[in-house]
Length: 228
Image (cartoon, rainbow, N blue to C red):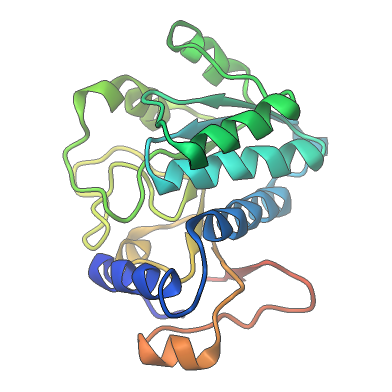
């Protein structure tokens, strides 16, 4: 089993990646979003259904979802994006412009139930490792739909509404697939579906410094599946 890390460790790792390691936030989002798209393709290729609903939050996890949407559009999917609380700023403005260029549409709140019913698979990129329960009121409607859907769901790094260190608690959301980024968080111990690790940009020395594992990626693969 790949070692799990705490929310505190994850924050320190991100800080150093964007510090002495020289990565920018948009680089990390690009790598993360690409990994999510690759994992989704592994479990649900377009031949099984190409309609993907991507739920994006206001933070970096949401940015990962926007990048994943672009990659999915290039892989033969028909992604749609729902963002309950859009984020302003140059980085997110650029990601939204990219989706306009790739003709990836956004879903209005009034059309969200219909988008859930017509999607073949759903990507949860609402909350990242900085999330602390409970879910804010503006996100309750989308979380209710996410928790009750029978469609396959892919959670980005953390299943939304879960405590990063302690797992689901009272959450009713149980995704089908989890794509942990850089390293699995402690809540992954409570996850029962297919688990992938993505973020193939870490040196063994860096992983050793922060006491986590580099998965044994093969060939050109951008994700590693941890088998039960």
